[in-house]
Image (cartoon, rainbow, N blue to C red; front, side):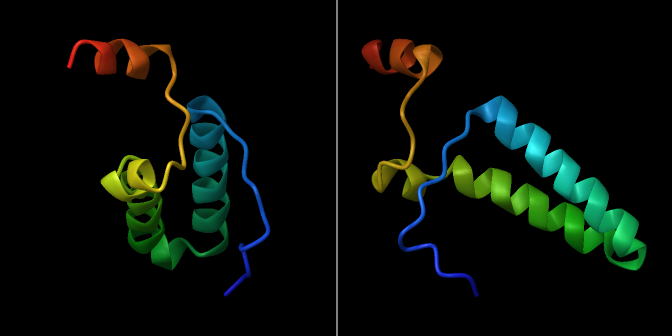
Length: 73
């Protein structure tokens, strides 16, 4: 597994979606017999980035929509 301890990732939701869609398409093209696993993996990544763990570890900076929702709570 890669060592991510010194890396910083910078992307917004649109960039993540585009990159993940590209990755999914490339993986399916290379490994068509593993399509279901590849799609599940991409969904797991989306789920992880929406998780309480990501919020708890402060891995996101809220956007306008998120801040507006937080003010109402």
